[in-house]
Amino acid sequence: MEGNGLGKIYQDTEVIVKQGDQGDCMFVIQEGLVEVVKEMDGGEVVLALRGTGEFFGEMAIFEREVRSATVRALGEARVLTIDKKNLLRRIHEDPSMAFHLVQSMSARIRELSDELARIKLSQDL
Image (cartoon, rainbow, N blue to C red; front, side, top):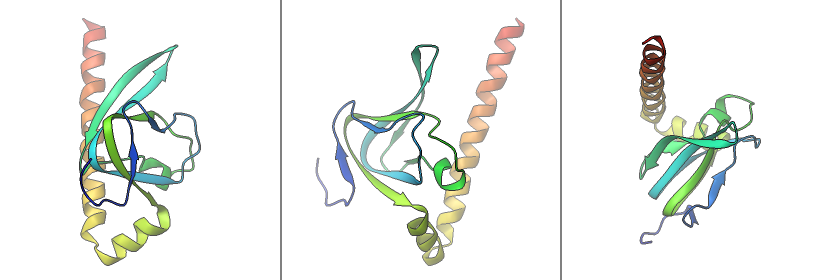
């Protein structure tokens, strides 16, 4: 993997965060691809794929809950860890970062709402 990123390099299928673990930081994908999976009823459901420039694990910064999903590398991925203190410092330096974070989270909520509506509709048929 090329680049001079500061993040940690994860190998294919390596777990970055595990569902049920306590979390206090978020992650930014500097290079590569990760999959977000929810473990349910003895199986796994892929919730999302995230790539270069995207983030995950942000709920841990805003909530004191355990990780709601497992995230693992698909191929080699370089991922930067950002704790709450560093996030707040970065937002102070560049307030537009907060807007970008909220905008991304809002888009994800909209996607989840649409998916929930599709599921409910298919159950009613």
